[in-house]
Amino acid sequence: MAPKHISYRLMRRRMRRTLNYGENRRMDHLSLPLTELAADYFDKHAPFDYLDMDYATNLSREGCVDPCTLIVALVYLDRVRLNDQQYFETTDPANLYLAALIVASKFLHDDGNADFVYNDEWAASASTTLKHVNEQEINMLNGLNWNLLVNAEDFGSALRSVESHLARKSLLSRGYATYSDLRVLSRHLAETNYLWQQFLQPLLTLFGLASLAYTATVFGLFGASLHLRGLSASTGMTSCDKPTLPI
Image (tube, rainbow, N blue to C red):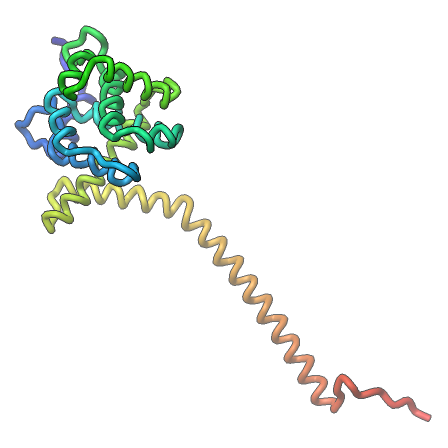
């Protein structure tokens, strides 16, 4: 087997730490937190149904779903949710999840590769028929408009979102954060700070200056009005006084 590229090894090391795999666990299945994340995704975005945890766990185990496949599948689910809301909301989350995993797996693994999973194997993993699996795959492809490309930016953004979700959930459930959790959350804060410095802070500064100028103008007009009233009072004239012409 050809040696793995250094970037691949670094990514695997990162995902072991941030996706709750530890040092020794194999990464050809989803960890429990990742499976729970998939269920949480549908709890958040599917208004009328939910993803059964037993189904998701069994599909992960029998279908050999790895973290990269899940992350690409989440990218596809987001695309479908935004591009074809009716399809997303009227389809059983179990079918959406299955179809997204199938398409993601085929995007990542070529036919004949050791990690390639055929549709009859997916059907067995999901305890359904091959015909049903084929139909769900076609529906997902149509929902995506056959836009299957996931570039490095798409993948990186989805991975950071997954890492942040797991770190926050871990912190809330345990009451403390691990070193890995702190690194993930601090990176998220750094990105938020960059957004603040580059976009939000200048915008708010401009808004503040405009508000200050408006306030100064209002007070200036109010002061001028008071000054004119003072002049009128000092000369003993009112708005009804008429000047007397000399005779």
